[in-house]
Length: 291
Image (tube, rainbow, N blue to C red):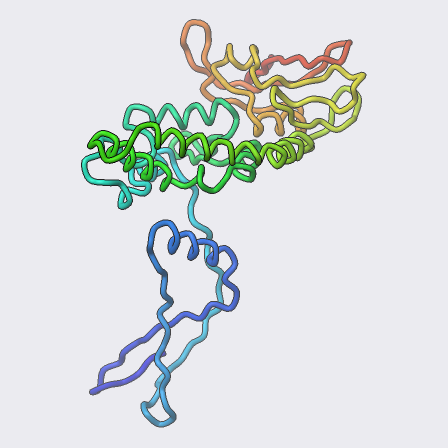
C-alpha cells in the first residue's frame, strides 16, 4: 500500500496467511523449543477517508520451506541446542562435545539414518526412511535437547552435594522402564520401514524392499540382494546407500565421481548392475570410451 504524506510517498507492506501449511509446525517448534514467537506484520485498519491511497497492489505467492542443514549448520545447531536451559558452570553445552559431534553425524550416516546429497561444493544432510522411522518411534523426551540440560543440571547438583547419586539413577531407571513400553510401536515402525519398495528385481521382476542389512528381492526363491556393507563399493571408497540402490535398480547403472584406486588415485566411473546365473548381483565398471 502506497500513501502520501507531506508530498512524499511512503510504502507499507503487510502479510495475511491464508493457509499456514508447514509454517504452523515451525511456529509451534519455535515457540515451544526456542521460546521465539513469529508475528506477521499486519497493516493497520484505516477508516474511510482517513487517508488517501495512491496505489495498492495485491500479490499472491507461496513460502519456501526451510533449507536443509549442511554439516556445518548441524554442528552449530548441536552446539547451541538448549544452551539457554543449561545451568551455569557445566562443562558440556548443547548436544555432545566438540570432540564427539562430528563423529556422531558420521555414525548416523554410516548406520543409514542420514545421507549426504548435493554437489561436491555443497552437500546437505537428509534423513533416510530408516531415520524417519526412528524419529517416529523415538519418545519426545529423548528427541529433546532439554533432557541433556536436565541431566547436566542434576549432575551439577550431585557434584555440589545437593542431590544423591542414587536418586538420579532411580529417575533414569524409571524413565527407561517407561520407554521400554514403546517396544511394540517400535516394531511396527520397523516393519513399515522394511516393507518400503524401492525398485524391481532385475533377476525375477519381483519387488525389492529395504531390510536392515540391504535391499532384498521379495521373492524368497530369488537370491538377488544389494548389501549395504558392500565390498565392491568399499574398494572404490564409496557407500552403497539408498540413493545409489535406487539408481541401480531404476537405470541399471550409477555414475560415481572421485572413486579411489588401490594406489590412492581418484577417477570417475559408471557402476553397472548385472546378475549372476543364480540371481545374485554383480557389478562392473565402465569408463569413458569403453569398459
